[in-house]
Length: 334
Image 1 (tube, rainbow, N blue to C red):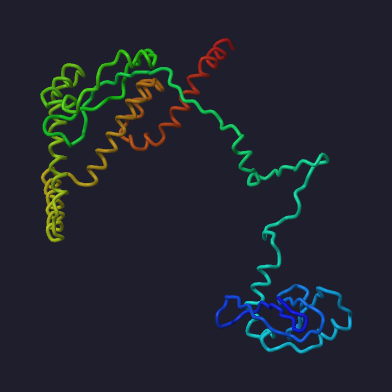
Image 2: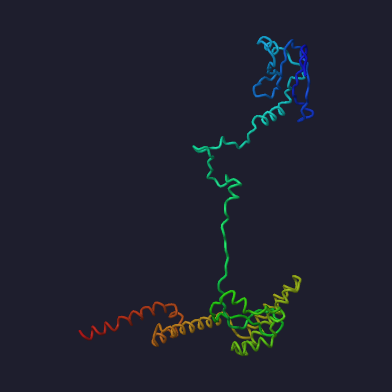
């Protein structure tokens, strides 16, 4: 609002004590017969630091009047202090552009005016995603193959009594069954109480059905009992002194057993070498790689040295047996 004699100019200035609040101040100037509109210093066209403002005449105003208005000294309330630079620059950057910071120019279009679609994955719009069809995935079950494994003596110690039972490696493969046929023909699942096998039933299954000797079943039962006792010992909390005493007692027990059996390291090593030699001779005899003469040579008193050279000896003997008939035939005809 204004009158002809005095023009009221509205100016937006920043108060540092109450930043970032904006205070509207009204300042009166003696501008005869003209109305001027004052724009604050945060305009992009203003680059002065002493508070000069750009004037725009709203009525008929000559250039001399505008120049006189610009030369007129502004009041202290319109002068921007140097301490307000921070708020001034922040608001200037805020109102500099209404476009986002990631603006990359106008959208490229075809000759007919339709917008081009970007090749990047992140540029797909929500409408394109809604119209896109999700890939169809199907899971189907056709046949069921059943195997019946043999029963064998196990080594699991967590049985209440008797020998543990497990599955062996041999199995019988049955023909494939359709899933629907299997589901209609199979019975109900038995509860956990019926899946438990008593000790006497396990012995009967191992001896009569799996044809396992009763001696092996008893040995497995004793071994499971011993392992169960060792497991119980390790579960009991012990003091470091008790553990040390147990280690010393175990070491002394092993030494006494070695002395009682009159065995030493050299004798034990010789026994192991002899067992390995017998196993190797048995393998050679089963495969038929050499004859009885070769077995006699291998089983000579120097069996350790012959065992190291056995592979080369067998290879040389095989070559001789392959070419000796031809050589004998040539010598006889010559």
